[in-house]
Amino acid sequence: MAWAPLLLTLFPPYFPGSSSQTVVTQPPSVSVSPGNTVKLSCTLSSGTGIGDYYVYWYQQKPGNSPRYLLYYYSDSDKHQGSGVPARFSGSKDTSSNAGYLTISGALAEDEADYYCAVRKSGTGVLHSDTDRWGSETKTPFPPLPQPGPCVQTSPVAQFCLWL
Image 1 (cartoon, rainbow, N blue to C red):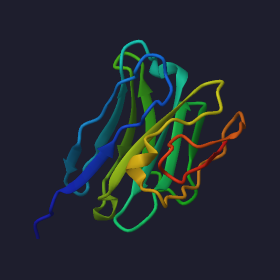
Image 2: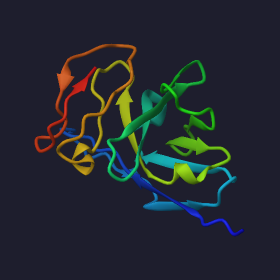
Image 3: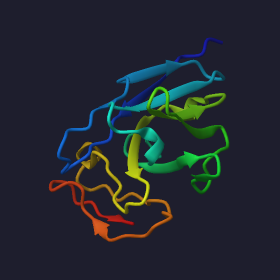
């Protein structure tokens, strides 16, 4: 029985209101055969050090709201979402200025859209391109180390981040 490759689509985060535009690069899609391991990247432009940022990952399947998977800041400061399998893990690499989501032993059910979002350490604002998630999205965000105000990052999306 032949396995069909899984298509994993990635969407980059957005940094609203910054004085200099931050560029985030992600491949538009990644294919992986079931059972294999795949590493999804979220790369920041030079001048924006990934080492200072928490990297959050979300999964969205057709017809469903995005699901929080995990955040990663360091090996001692990370969080796995409730019910998220251990095959999903986060990491960062300062030399490539990127955050990563690794799916070890990918399953057919992992075929989905994946979003990354970033938050600078010491701030309470989670930056992401919420326009891509649609105007009705309500996402359960994880607990953050430093609570802050509710911030609507997009003027279009009816979206509030309780931080």
